[in-house]
Amino acid sequence: MSVVAAKSVVSIQYTLKNGEGETIDASEAGDPLRYLHGAGNIVPGLEEKLEGKKIGDKLEVVVEPADGYGEVSGPGPQALPREAFEGVDPAPGMSFVAEDEDGNQVHLWVLDANEERVVVTPDHPLAGVTLHFAVEIEAVREATAEELEHGHVH
Ligand code: ZN
Image 1 (tube, rainbow, N blue to C red):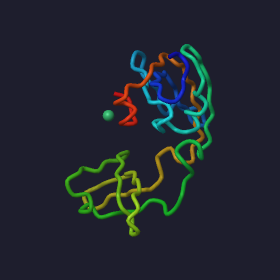
Image 2 (cartoon, rainbow, N blue to C red; image 1 turned 120 degrees about the vertical axis):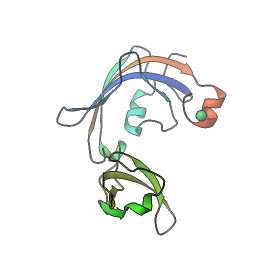
Image 3 (cartoon, rainbow, N blue to C red; image 1 turned 60 degrees about the vertical axis):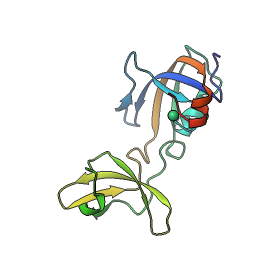
Image 4 (cartoon, rainbow, N blue to C red; image 1 turned 135 degrees about the horizontal axis):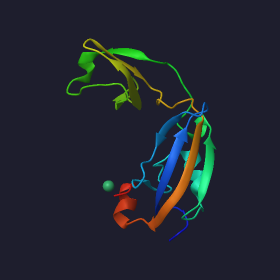
């Protein structure tokens, strides 16, 4: 298997920049990002553009927020009492899955934390950011049955 398609495990080297050209994230040399293609392991806008690409291909992909980490939505940051986080040590950048009043699961990201309160937001830290990826495909292989069952790379 040398073409990126559903059920393949893809290794990529990547650099991610924001609209201002600042590097937000990058893979380390010798330690590529490995993901299961077609399983939603990476942002949809990037996954779509990697489809059909081959080992050695280099590409630049611009992903709008809607196909990346989403738009910034309401209700914005909220302060919760520290007691609500029993058993964990919340720190900026951490994320939690919580239940809202209707019993829906929501992702909450920690912006700030001190002894009394923890400030959280439902928006991913990269929500609203246009993502500029530079990607090189290092390897493609077929996923194992177990990886397909789990929906991620082992
Ligand atoms: Zn697994």
